[in-house]
Length: 325
Ligand code: HEM
Ligand SMILES: *[C@@H]1O[C@H](CO)[C@@H](O)[C@H](O)[C@H]1NC(C)=O
Ligand SMILES: *[C@@H]1O[C@H](CO)[C@@H](O)[C@H](O)[C@H]1NC(C)=O
Image 1 (spheres, rainbow, N blue to C red):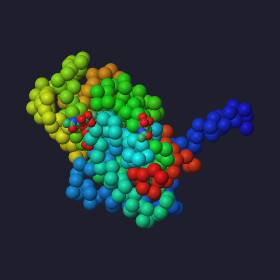
Image 2 (cartoon, rainbow, N blue to C red; image 1 turned 90 degrees about the vertical axis):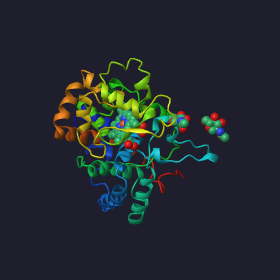
Image 3 (cartoon, rainbow, N blue to C red; image 1 turned 90 degrees about the horizontal axis):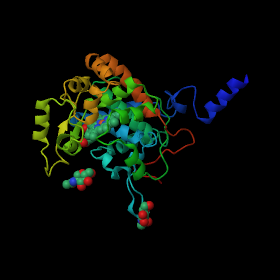
Image 4 (cartoon, protein in one colour; image 1 turned 60 degrees about the vertical axis):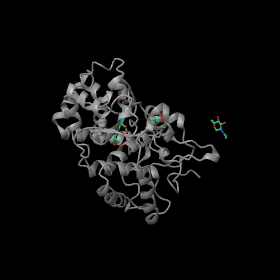
């Protein structure tokens, strides 16, 4: 081995860059230890989805907010414990609207029954998000597995610092995703997750009534009137009332991009991507080419869900997803 290759191999070792990619994760990770895993997750979600079609949105956002704080390690699932002075990532207002965390615990129980002590909550969470996309009409995404769960107490401070605020703009967004190895195109594609789900009025009140330079974002006047009607200023119910992220909120499609192009972007980031020179052409492309969106979303999803994760002897496989023992 020549010295240059030697240095490269040592660097790859030090930084944990495996030949499989995804830093030591593998597509066939549970091939022997839990071959039924993906079927269990899919079959477990189906009946819940049939009674609550908003489930996919909740799982997809849950994945982002878990992975955004020190990699996907199921830290968002850990409940606070008063007498141990243990906080929860859920305590930050950035996690307002995060729901259905208990679904992952339910899936974990089903997985434990079939393959005890083999599968991390972190992998189950990412698999659930992957199913969420597929079940609502989006792409079928293959994801590498082998993540481990965090074993240290969750940090409210880290969650508060790392999850973007509802007022985030394009530069902030690109910084977050390009630092996970995404291209600009993939960064715009991962935001297409906003094709699902809802936004509570609380999160758009600033944009609607307290413009702070947000005024010239080209919001279509009838859309603005509609939002103001549904989210009145000073309302006591802003924490419970919500508007749809796009008109086909239960379907994973490229409607989000079409909407944004028409001045119907709901959050600042949704609207600003149409105006920003780095992202505008990509928005246009995804609005007219759903396959291009699906392809870029799929690779972006893998990057988001593999970046900075715990592997091998790092972390643990928790017994219960909501408890660190
Ligand atoms: C800069 C980036 C982002 C910002 C500022 C942002 C902000 C938000 C906000 C404020 C909401 C409304 C929450 C509520 O009021 O209940 C929301 C909802 C949502 N976000 Fe994002 N988001 C970002 C990126 C992402 C990414 C990368 C994903 C997934 C891959 C995602 C998936 C979702 C989903 C599915 C919902 C709907 C949740 C539900 O219906 O329960 N978001 N986002
Ligand atoms: C809990 O932790 C916080 C922050 O570290 C500290 O200020 C507080 O005194 C602690 N409370 C108890 C009961 O240990
Ligand atoms: C609404 O949610 C925000 C953010 O979590 C919280 O600070 C506030 O107290 C809530 N307001 C009401 C009326 O529940």
